Image (cartoon, rainbow, N blue to C red; front, top):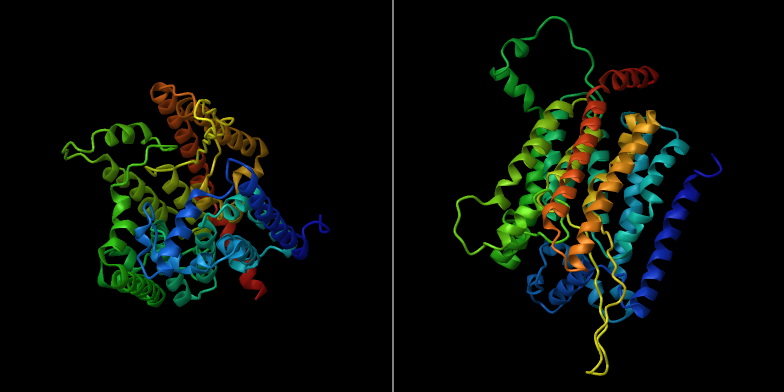
Length: 463
């Protein structure tokens, strides 16, 4: 085993996997009617081209991201195939850097104190994952966000609070959802080591225990690390937003933030809200006080940003962030896959336009949001300690997706109406499996307190 999981071999393999994927993508784009490059990458590069011409990136229809992304990808507007693909290289390198941070966290005393070989084994779930490599080399920007998230976690457990605040503000500006981590990090920061459990308290109740809403409780809560995190994160977030608003006015606010509050995206959507959103999209002109696309945030935010942090953050920060992200994605009103359908236009007007073989491809960018944190949870999870449970969970997770994709194929390519009961039932089944898996995660993290405390005590003694 030690001959396989060495730093040189794992990272060389990760680099090789992404280089091969990039080269293959160039060939497929050149010779296949079904393109390798993600449609989102075309949106990014078009926006970057507008910026290079002194225009707003929002001149590109469907660009719903911070202008910062278009600024980063400015070299893609330069002449030449290499520069056009340079954004994919940036995303792929971000993948690898994220894998390096995973290894650093696993090796840290607060993250498990693993030896390099063992840490590499779990980091390989991300680094050597073909799905991760494919998504980044197709031009998805999720690699950039992934490195921000794991760097944030590393900064917190190493007590680099100012750096953690900057990374949190940057990540939330880049894509809204990382704001849910703020609650967990703040709640964990009264512990000596935020990724581990709190040591056993004295049996004698303190004044803050006797009077939970006293002034002493409030001043204890707003300790120096928490205030530092709040100030640094809010300053970063506000500064970036002010800068973008100064350049692009209300277009920035609408497309980057406000659009997502009322977004209706019912195509290729795994969400249990899919069918309801489809009905809402057909009645957008009708005035209604009940806006499903806005109300859907209530259970999502309540579970991922409030309940899970309060229950788990002081026991295991990395595991809590995974559970938060998993819940956020499971309850999200939009969780899209990508469907490619290509037809060739005939040269002769009398010929019939025959579609190329129907292809339903799955582009699970949303799932990368929690996959980046999975290697940090698995070492002490029930899914590994009980292989049968792990195999069953994986089989159900993949199987219910396949069932949904089959219904989506019949709808998208065969023209059959499968909304009810096909898509609706398969979406609910996938949702139910996700909730079951989330329940196991929460139970694992909630019962990890004793194990974490013992491990931390041993680390403290060794110091």
